[in-house]
Image 1: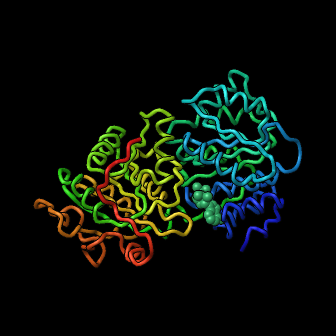
Image 2: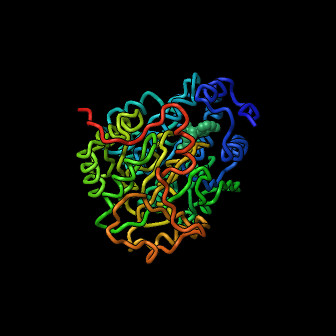
Image 3: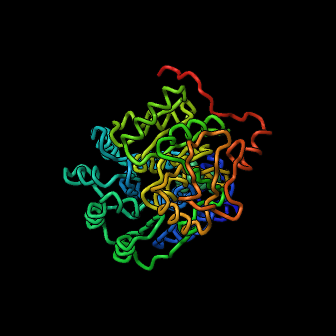
Length: 420
Ligand code: AMP
């Protein structure tokens, strides 16, 4: 399968090739032909599957024809980071078509956004709150929108944005194409889809099951040895770049500070940071200035750094969905990834929930040479699969073994932090 089967405008075909996409991903294979026909789509797919291009390419194809300099496509996203990322993908895929897009979210000045509306932009990618502000001030005209995309609809719901989304949808032209994407399908999203989509085609990619390229490992530990275990894991793990999750903003900040003191090149990403500071963390992580990013769930939505080799759950997430979203950051589009979870006794029931969804036990691991201070993991977490506890010398499984023999492996080491 290649992209040429979709018969898209040659400028789009060229941009796709420039982006380095040679084969459509499964969600693209299923979604693009349907969306090109103008049919509504309800897509069940998580981040990392290539869903952004799955909705962007049909939109761009539509916009190559017809009037310019008016807003014809509206994409709603739950977070600024995701909006920014979709915007970047739009710039990449629009190639030489001259189609414009603007990202619209709060926390930054409205001035540039309004200037973009005035110049005339065909695609608006917006977070609901700021978009409503602009609508209230009559700064934006959505009366000619032909396509609506709702991305990460379940996250919109989690973040309490559904009433805002409904208000926005109510003001759009009735005659339009709708493309909804969600990693899970809670009742509220099903309701919204039932009321909004018309004769939609359902497209489903690996319902909630995470990418097959990710391998999972559980490291039971006592609460007071958790940080030490993280340091030991990082010191003995070969990896490119790791994303570390904590449960709260405060823990993200303090863990990043502790890691920095240990000499790691690390940044934090949490909701109390200004938009500029978040952007600096993301771009520093993307460029390789930082090896580690310590993030909370919400702040991390949509971070798109393909080279993330490891996701480390310093804290077990509160929901199975959050686990799936977190580990969706690694193992992207065919690359192997590792998901490590540090679990304390209280996490045992959530671990069982996660294993139910994964439909298999997560491999139990014990880090060789680490002082567990008398902690007995089997009492709380059982033996896992039939192999029981594994004690890899270098955590990372087959992937790290493979990479050790290839050029340029990198292992976390305590290194001096470069000044900013
Ligand atoms: P998404 O799920 O849209 O966040 O996409 C995940 C990552 O996959 C992004 O970095 C895309 O640039 C990349 N990607 C999307 N489509 C393809 C493709 N057909 N081949 C290779 N990479 C892709």
